[in-house]
Image 1 (spheres, rainbow, N blue to C red):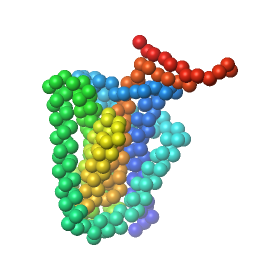
Image 2: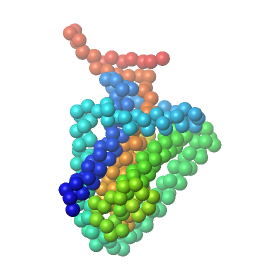
Image 3: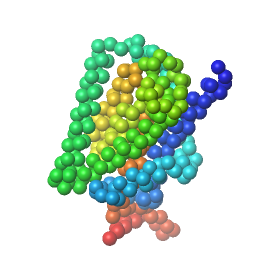
Image 4: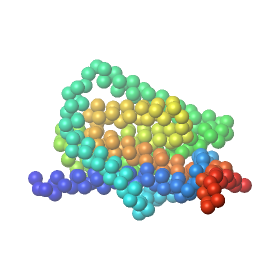
Length: 285
């Protein structure tokens, strides 16, 4: 095997993880640009099912794809950290896969089955929330449902594109973790990234962002993590597939939330001059 044979998969993973990381940074940059230096409170603006909503799919996708051009040193550092984790997992994919398959037992099998049930319940609950919002004209319920749907759709487009252009072989094929076929339409070669993991985190990041409390975020992220690990347990994905898929979904959800963020009319900012210190309170009408 040539050196290029081993180098190419590492470069591919590094590039794709770098792109995935841009989603989170796009969200951070969008929030900062909206709020400026003020310590103001923000919330998601009402989202309506109309032409502007669907145009937002294109706008948000474009902002996500072009966000690396706006990165600063801090952003590149964050990208490097995420990339390091993904590449580290990539080097250990074979070992992790063998260890997981060797240690499967009745307990893990039952946990996987229960996780599948939790996933169905979660999706049903979100669909029910959308139906309730539509029937009762509840803006808050519709906003959560529509933002979650946008996050899911955009993530799915990215994931399906990557699956078909990278062609990474799934673990159950028996091929090594560094086997990539490139463009393909064969499901056995759709390992990178994990669609289940990306979808779970695409929805969870939006729901957690809308219900920022001590209960909902740990709950939805916990369920999403179980869904992601289930794919490794079932030998359908490598560990790095699941990590990158989770990152894609999480970061996309954050970017979608940032695009719909609305700054509060009331804001606070520290005020310091030569005569003293205080707090500047401003209100927009």
